[in-house]
Every structure is written in structure tokens, then in C-alpha cells.
Image (cartoon, rainbow, N blue to C red):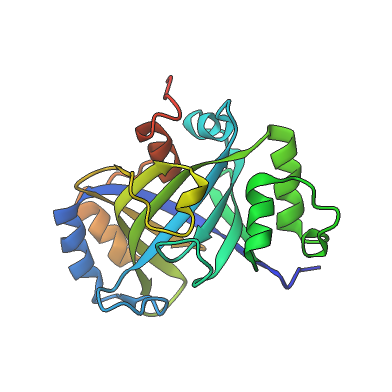
Length: 247
């Protein structure tokens, strides 16, 4: 039985790191086959993505990604604005990988008191809004089992496109990627102390259910795009010196 309070996504995700000049060229070319996503309202055709990732002191999620574990998951708080101030919706998200397919489950965080519980506490037994919600229950179980704490903010600008017709195919251009260590005073104001990630480069992500269209295959060949296993969370942990890649 599906929980009406939970949104579920499952798809394939391929990622490419490209310099900003190439990103601009590709963006111009795909305008023939795709349109800017309806979620964008800004005149600059982008929106903010702001995520706070949970990790433990042993950096289990970090090393699972580095080691290429085929079945893994992590938790984050996400909002599509510059601040976690409830002017825009805030979601608790479970992001996972099952072999080649990526899945995401998310639920709305409705008020600041709930946000405080997610960040600082583990006692959910007197919180009706957390009971019988799969995402919340999974989060608190993992938080207690792995001793998860909020660790790193990752923020960036995103330009999203969807294919004009045919099967679902979405492209996002993520740029101006920044990271900073978590501090609770940074939730509802602009983060001042940030480290740039992948300066001069854009992360191009393609998301699809079944196949990549022929027109994008031509772009891959034209620009010699190389699919990479890139994680903004991993990059942010490294630039903030919260974890070291030992591989």
C-alpha cells in the first residue's frame, strides 16, 4: 500500500563532468529536442538546490560510494531555495542505489519542530507525524544504528530540461557547486563559509526510465562525453576535509 505522504522515484541516472563552455554549447543544442522544466520560474532559467547530508564519524556512506557498493543509501534534507526557512518546502529524502538503478523516497517536513527532531533527536515515539511513515521510520532506524549526524551542506544552481516528446528523459546542468560543514545557525540564512567544488565545471545528469534517445547519443559522440560515477556529496566531504579518499 502506497503512503500518500511519500513520493517515490526510480530511474537510471548517468552523470558527466564537463567544462562550462561545453555545457553552454550542449545546452544550446538540446533546445531543439527539449524544453526548460516547468519547475523553473526564475528568469535565469535555474533554481537552487540546497541539501544537508547525514553521515557518521566513520564516514560509512562516503566509503560505500567510493568503494562502488551496488546497494547503498543515504539520507538528506533538501529544499529548492537558498535557505531551510520553510518559505519553500523542505523534504527528508532517502537516496539509494540498487545495482544500476537509482531510487528516491521523500516526505515533507512540515514544521520547524519536526526539523529539530530530525537534526538533533531520536525519540519519535510521541510524534504521531513520524509513525507509519516509511521514510521517517527508516531514517530514525538508520540514525540510531549508524549514529548519523548532519555533516555537510551541498548547494548549487540547476538548469533542468525535459524531452519534448516520447519516453521520460530529463537533463540537468548543475553548476556553482559549493559545500560547507554543518552548523545549525546556517539553516535559515545564507551560508557564508563555503568551499567551491569542481570550479569551472558543470555536472550534467541525465535521468530516464528505459533508454537514452538517439539525439543525445549523438551529443555524447560529438563531445566525447565520458560517463563518471560522480557524487556531489563525496566531493563536498573531501573539499570540507570531512573525509579522505583512501583508494
